[in-house]
Length: 249
Image (cartoon, rainbow, N blue to C red; front, top):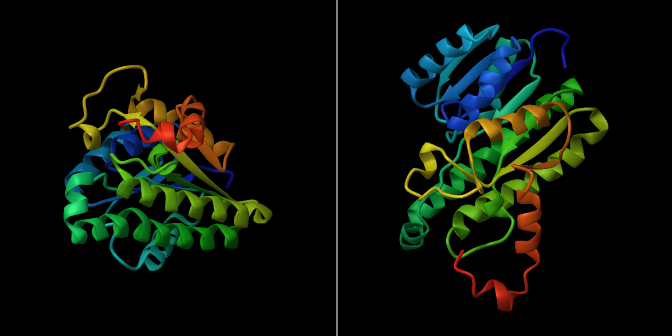
């Protein structure tokens, strides 16, 4: 990374987790580009981040799922004069029942969560390789660890993204650059507003953001957020099918 303020691009900057991470980096004086579709919300976030100490906070209103990721990324990297961190934090959850009934909606979810995300990841990989430095951070999900009846279409997109990021991390290792997949469990955000939230398994966006900020400095290629999800998913992945198939999860 450069010796001055870190240069950071956040895709999906209006999400609760991304905003919490941006506040951590703003307090460290980072220069940020905030990418998302809600221009007014991005402007409000940018103003808040400047008040918290950000060296710069520039909104970029665009749909991250739209084509031309490589060209758009290059434009933002040029504006920052390089790239220290890219956080990919956008995605859609969808409703499993509705997605199974609507192939068009399912295809759109797959295109957004995997297709477009893969394009940004590959474009970022090229930039980081050229620099021989920097970190790609991608928010995945524990849902990608094993297909479950409750969300296997969403889980499939996150599982595919996980393999991609792990491969990018392996490819980048000789260059000195890094890629890290962050796997949150249940997080209390607007995206999960329709789900009843109770118990110790639910985390706040700020908890996940702390894990992300730490992962930007060290660790990887896969980090669970919070860490106890690594044990939970290890058990779930290795349950025999005759037990797993009885679980309503």
